Image (cartoon, rainbow, N blue to C red):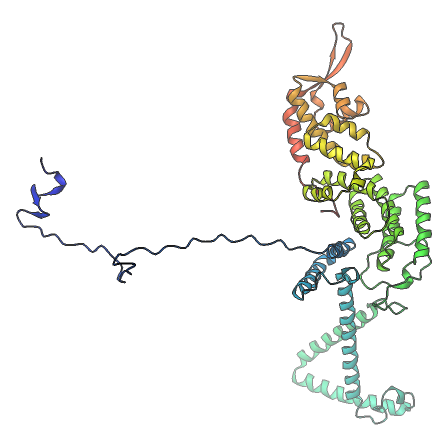
Length: 504
């Protein structure tokens, strides 16, 4: 057997690891590069220590908040002006953080806690008073120091009317002489600088005089407010314009409960006769504000929010409806009576509009057997089921059969579901389809409305009118094959996140 080439050096094979000619001496290579001695484990054998398996971090537990705290946060942002939202959020975080640090978040009475904007308003008033007091003290000290040289005027304002005109003129002339001497000295030493400084002083004084004349003192309530007792209004006006509160409410501008009851009857009559939504909405917001500042929570409060929510639904104002819905959910949970089943049905439809699955699951879990027997709740649950199953044929029948004001809520997402249904129809019926079929399947009242829907969505070029052999127009057809890509793009755009003021 021949020796392999890598076992030879200069064609001289190795013998027992050493070349035969002795020209090469092997050296033992160092195999361990570490200078530290290896630890011996066991009976003279070197083994590697076992590596401890890393334990995966446990997921952080979700922090829970009491319901009254959530209601407190909802009340905070209900009437929060946009310009002060950042300050209110900082103050709200501070309040909640302090409650958690002191471990009173569950025992604290959040329904009696003042709102962050009220706390900020109180701090501003206190700071303003401190500034005014400090300015008053500074002026009094300056006046006392300046008039100390006159014994007749040093005792205060009570001595000034008794002083003679000659004494007053003597004092003033003495101050004028001091000023003239100082001015002449400044002009002789620094003539240009003295002129500039005197001109600057005149401008500053003139500006201070204008600011003092234009400054408006903050409104002070004529009736003292005791924070320990609930506020009781004294205003007798039935109609009052809504305005956001930036300070503590004045009892003279707040209507008591018996006046608010008369106001509600008046607003109901005006809505039936005039139907002026901007006016009615403003008056209802003012009414709700008077109820809130007086901490009035009764069945009458529930009635006010229910009527305002129905009017908002009728006009398609989902932002205002959601504010009423949030307060109604809180009032129902506290045991106040109203049309709870009706508004639970509206809430199911509203959550379908916003695609809020988490809140939907919570609502379905809290439904009682009594709630499920209500016709409005049954209808809303059926709508949810058919949408989950993709049964648009049944969905549009339920849309036409919606009880009470459920149809107004379904109007908010009916166009989106028609987009989805059109994608299914364009895949199933090719190459075209009769307009009458679309009218019946998509819940339109006439063919004209169906054609208008297609034209509004850019499909007017895909509508064609077919005639018989004699040239008489017989049917209107819609080209489904060409319309598929168009409606798929619109469906993706329609199912994006809903962004409406007040509820997200």
